[in-house]
Image 1 (cartoon, rainbow, N blue to C red):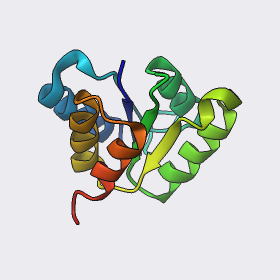
Image 2 (cartoon, rainbow, N blue to C red):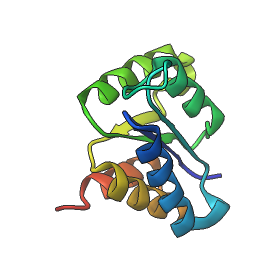
Image 3 (tube, one colour):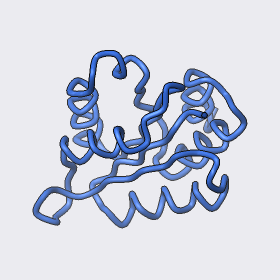
Image 4 (spheres, helix red, strand yellow):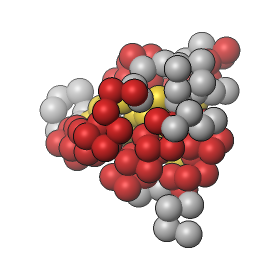
Amino acid sequence: MSVSVVVVSHSPKVAEGAADMARQMVGEGVKLAWTGGDPDGGLGTDVAAIVAAIESVWSPDGVAVLVDLGGAETNAEMAIEQIDEHKRDLVVICNAPIVEGAVIAATEASGGSSLAAVRDAAEDFYG
């Protein structure tokens, strides 16, 4: 088991691309999920889709969530609030660039690091 990574972007293509890049860097050892776009297929984010993405890769080691713009962070926070309270403390939002952060978080997770170490690595990427 390892920390999982969820990518949330206003654009489904950006979210999928960032998750795909992370997947290609770390292989199948880290669970990765992505979500992007609003329920109508436009730019935006969807709280229910974020909840589903987190649940799809849930790990008792935790889940690191990477977001792009402010609304994605707000919706990710709302999604985390909707998750079972026993799980919610093990889900963190990383304040990091979405592509670089996803790759670094996944790389750190693939080495068996803790959730705090995964978040720190993603957030410290740019020093």
